[in-house]
Length: 246
Image 1 (spheres, rainbow, N blue to C red):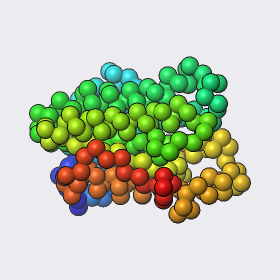
Image 2 (image 1 turned 90 degrees about the horizontal axis):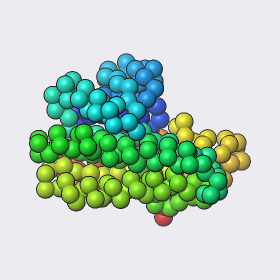
Image 3 (image 1 turned 180 degrees about the vertical axis):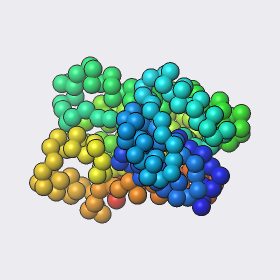
């Protein structure tokens, strides 16, 4: 029960890593809002783990504000925000990615962190405590070719994590990131271009431990970084990647 008495929002909580983080947080005693643009997915996860669901477009200011206000009303106090929602473009030479794809990737992966900070950081500052967790990627540390603008968005997220950590430390607010390698999530096929045994084998050959990240891996790492056990840890980008970045 490492998160007993804590409250949390997890964006992109309706599937993949986000669903794994939500499940772990509830199992460790937290009250959780499963936030996702897909309300059916959010509701299904929330019902399964006894949490709350909320529909949010993390790239839209009014929608993020509504999510934050709903959490403040529901919980009274918000302790944790996990910025997990993310998308990618298909593997494409960098100059061939459309402007629309670029804008969408940066809106969901980068602007969303800005928006949640706008609406949640003042609340955490006022309370003198809080934990921000950004789900970045090994792509932001050791980029793969043809995912250029996705890589860049995750590098942005890592830098944002560190700058937020420095600025918010005097207010008792911590900011960390986790960097998974690709996992069995809805984005896996997008990363690989197509999902075949040969491409999977090639992808897995770059991971020393020989397997993808799982939602349980992300839940365990997120739980530690958002718990009081990590009270002196801020500004880290923890690699949860089976050795991919070595």
